[in-house]
Length: 159
Image 1: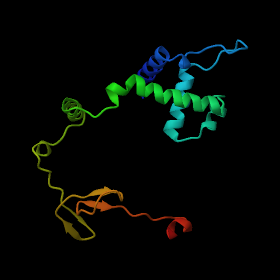
Image 2 (image 1 turned 60 degrees about the horizontal axis):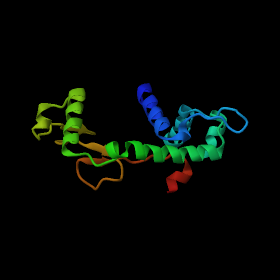
Image 3 (image 1 turned 120 degrees about the horizontal axis):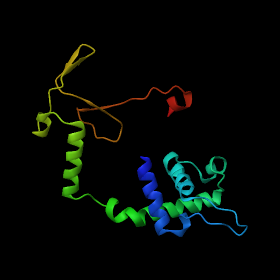
Image 4 (image 1 turned 135 degrees about the horizontal axis):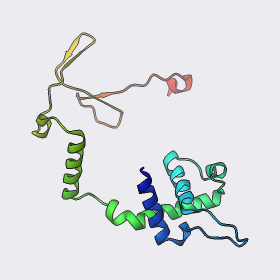
């Protein structure tokens, strides 16, 4: 994420929720800033860590990390849900397509519905059509080539 986007999200959360504002505790010591709470929640979500991971990195206790994560998720849904967490409209899809096309470009034949020729030879055999590598979630079609694993560990070979 860009720094500008991160700061915008933190500002929006601080503007809408007192939880993300830095406050003094009963002793007068300042608590965590909005950016620290944002970082805590994002680290849990991005890395799939447990809530005790931020104890060393941010000096934030497990309960505070858990509370922060709950407030962060609720805040993102409340603040951005109506605009970003919805099914895209036809106009949205057209804008996405235009941006992608401008950024990456596509061969003209793909836009007209025709795929470019992608024949190839492998192990001395001729294949007239292209193939896409995929995992096990796709049905068996001739254009999808399922990958296979070559596990190193004995336990994974048995599974």
